[in-house]
Amino acid sequence: DGRYMAVGALEEQFWSALADALGLTDEEKKRRPADAQALIARMEAIFLTATQAQWSERLADIDGCVTPVLSLAEAPAHPHNRQRATYRTLDGIDHPQPAPRLSRTPGVIQGPAPRRGEGGAERLRAWGVTLP
Image (cartoon, rainbow, N blue to C red; front, side, top):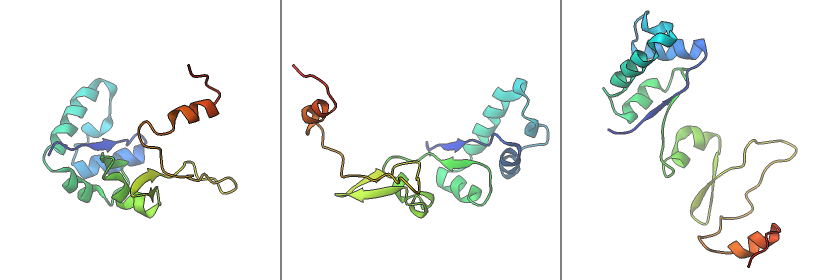
């Protein structure tokens, strides 16, 4: 469907879970550097057998460090981001919450981002930039 999955299964337990879910052979699971390109091609071929939504559903319950690559419009609605309150809506626009979240000095979104061209000169002057 032209959509992507992000794979970050670097640690052995994550790689093992993902490799099992993808049906890789024992030989393919060994992850030898010399075989990297062949393994990438094999995984790409496997991922092409289903849509991103299908892979997301199939892999949802494994601990394999694999997620769908989402558009900016999709990210706020993703169940993980909703559960963690990763976004806040201000004036109808979704904004990522500040990170990291610190208990003693929590970040706060002070207001919506300015519109294109709005208040740029004032902000630059406030930061000490001399304008012509």
